[in-house]
Image (cartoon, rainbow, N blue to C red; front, top):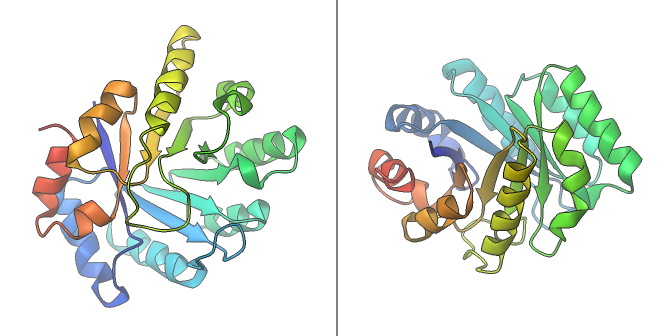
Length: 220
């Protein structure tokens, strides 16, 4: 079954509460929070995303997933654990070594939260294989992290296929989530490659009909 996580990156602050209600009614499975520190990536969404997460916690029971695009991962993990998200994702590229990656994975799991590892387009998929037995999800970035509205990079499809094959051959129970340029036109290609959760922001938010847009991503 294909699930959809809606990124709130393109939602205006004055619209966040109504948009949240509308997305819940439309059938989104998750709210996707893009936390950027202005260092790991150019944009800075720290204050806005924190505010959005606090709003969402008060008005809906839809699970929240936090995508950390930050240098100081541990600081932001601690901050967001207090808001009880469903999953916290962090970038392998922001870690210095294997020890740091495993430490963060353990810390998130110890706090009753699912953990996901993010992979940017230029990162070799082999770099994350050793961590898959210890995590719940892999977030494959199909655009360069940090900006909404980009077009999906076609070469990332092969990364999804490679990851899906590895997970299948080893009988791991790990979700493959994709983020970046996800639209109706490429949703089936992504799910056929092995993705089971699609992150979409711009396409859904700008659609004019959330329910229809989410249904199309799910292949309905």
